[in-house]
Image 1: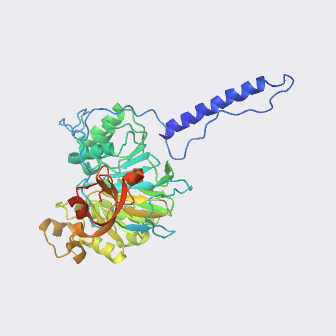
Image 2 (image 1 turned 90 degrees about the vertical axis):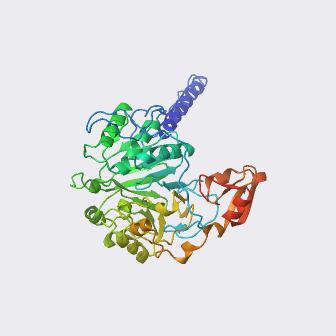
Image 3 (image 1 turned 180 degrees about the vertical axis):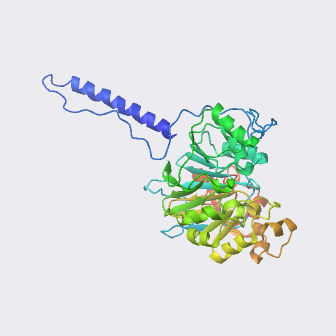
Length: 449
């Protein structure tokens, strides 16, 4: 990862030093070399903390709270890592969101902000009534929250299926179980360079398990301050909340970040409520973002009209559990989203969602939903809030797909795996998803077409 690359760069520079000295020694004895190559490596990158190696991936299982009494030092972690696949995605057509530069693209080759080929992926995992967001940029990984106990092994399995072997950052937005349990599982399964967490304590078993794994694996832990910036390859993220870790409500101590890649931006603020939203809006920090993960799962205690106006998102994502007992997402929040004209994506109805950014344009593994039913209506089976678009059979909607005629898999054009298909096996298909399934093709697990 970044630390290993810096080490390799230093070794190469040192070899050049030796070579330069040898050349000078073999030259005219009367001549002295007036200058030479230095072996100094590049300086530390902004925002990263280089602590000790996070340790090899452990076979220990993570994510459960121990059976011991609250506050005791627990070493038991439950929830085995499995190869479960990511949550199902809707068959709706993929959506596109343009950044400030505007424009839409269907090309697979993308350009990173510095002009080199690259992209960033942001995946909102379907972890039921919880949050878990995986970010990948230039082979580096950030995980924000991990869902509750029953999804711990799913999150670990998803990361393994994505080829993750080490995490550069893990952010625990706050210490509620539906955000923290999966993080405990992940930290037991993967090395991690840096954990960012809020500076407050609680007496829950899962918090004790979190503290235990940090100590046992000697993972660097920091309590970030509002305005601090961190690098993730060509992407960067800024801490936008809280302004202090002294709120009476734990939700308001949530760490929030604004993630930026080129001209594209994502706002992720845990369960931050109205009071913290007001502070963010008046802080002077940039919070306007292309994509906003609705705080507190679309609760009426968050996403006020004033805050929504300040963020001005093109897309709102809601991570909530189907049939949850809290009524998430709330009617008021859904009405705000509809009135704003932002596209809506919901894990409770569409499963795991992935956004692909090339620094100018954001594309998705599926299209936005037109289902504006609140959580109570979904739980009650009320279909009156569905639009005609939702009632259509998405399986029969025509779309462009990339086929691997050898593996019999089909992909969205924006899927990274589609780029690796050999020319002799690659084909394009314009038609419905169901037609491909009937022909014996299987959907790609990565892009969930």
